[in-house]
Length: 284
Image (cartoon, rainbow, N blue to C red; front, side, top):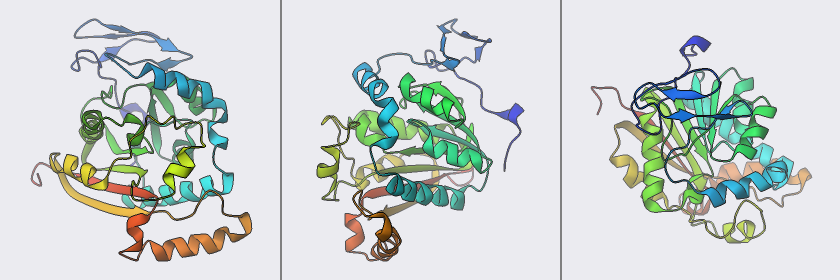
């Protein structure tokens, strides 16, 4: 499944959403002529309204973003996500939407995936590039600058509750499906509104400002029902809290695995996780 570098995705103009972007440095749309500049080598492919306040906020916290959760807990969830993705797509070209500083992208790149990261914050993308996580582009999740069927996997982690508005959440999910090739997977990993600890944690970490909306699993599944998908799987995962002591992490991880299998309790897990396979022509 892994592709050669020469076949990596091309940019689609986010303005007219038709033409290919051409050029070195500044990029120009072959269809509408619109020009897009780069910043620190990162193409800035934003067109139309974006959340400038949110971008500015993330620019301001980019240098301390990775320290907002204890490293051992962050590593635990990183391992869960990498293992989940490898179980679906063992190799290939990946788009990390709302990639932040690139911890997940870097872990996937180290395993041989070709990774693109998309985010509206140039500050976060600078950290992404600096850690060698992959190729970066400044882009809005609701208007991804890639052609249809470009990726083997599109993934977002803890993104949709920041997008918040239902219509924009739906646009972002549909865009992830659009850029995923037939047979490829879309993975959405976000906060579960049923989990009672999120209001406590979100009230004291800098990335959350109070403007967020936790997106119910039912809403995600309803959006995906209107997409060209052959298969949708839904999970409730995650019970290890940010305050677990290092010596108790193995015990907490074992308990977590048990709780994730219990139908009543798992409804309170930290994360809603959805995996959706893009259908081939004969499956949709």
